[in-house]
Length: 439
Image (cartoon, rainbow, N blue to C red; front, side, top):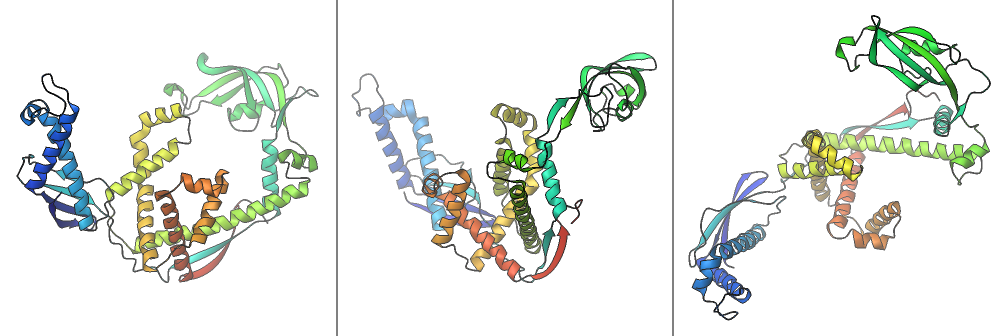
């Protein structure tokens, strides 16, 4: 197919192609299309492949011309893209008002978004902070306590009938405001964890010291989120009767506890060592993530450029898909139908940052002539395969082509960040891994 094209720069991210396909090519494409149609159709009075052109045009002219138009647009556009060495990031917007006529040239315009030419001029000498996150025995103890909480058992209280702090009290209650019973301020076999702050604060305090089946009254303030707006903030009187007592039973911190956590542990010391190693990894990962995120933030701020909207839209879609993919299908569909547009808008700033970061790091990696060796790529693929529990060979077979190339881009970007850190003005800082913990 013979065609000519001209290119016009509309902006740093948009090009307009004016494409002309010569009339002889149009004639040839129409002839081929009608020949194929003649072989396929069955019309009474004509043998297969012998239906005259004028008869086919009576029945199928619109269909044939639409088929040819789509082929002409697609092929000539692809040729123009190759000719002008463009790398489109989205489908083009095609404007074609002309009609296909055998023997006449056919022209149309295609507007397409392309990657901007990003120049990273400010990347050396950035002010960066390398933080060392510290932790101590208090952090290990906090992790052990969290593990204890996850292994808690609920047991009946049989040696007393008096409510204590932290008890789980099963109670019946009803409420009134200004002497009138209020629907909603009542419950049967309702369980309250005393002191947890999930029931009325005044009632939880009043429960301490009360005995089972001992009814009492307490005044409480109706919460601001109560369903009846006219009662919010008013004082209500609750009639409460404790009916049963249970308590949380934490396991002892001993070797048996460690074994219950995992077969990998033979003793409590083994568990503590694993927690220590986990905190070390957490501290190292946090410090590394922070300085790398700071590098990206400064690169974005120091090197502004126009971003193709279609790339941002694609990232927005992917972010929302990733969110919803964590949910059961029915729940994901309900959330999408109810909150789809809002989720997309909420994801847009993050998507824009991701696109800017990707383009900047790609440009910097190219400027620094950063490459990824086969050994490095194989090591990365093996690491990713291990996370999925499959072999590197199967991983390659499943994620081939563009996905493998994505890994290379990502690795080049990470190396580019390493180069920025190496050339940065680094200062050191120390912070506790957990603000509330003490060493």
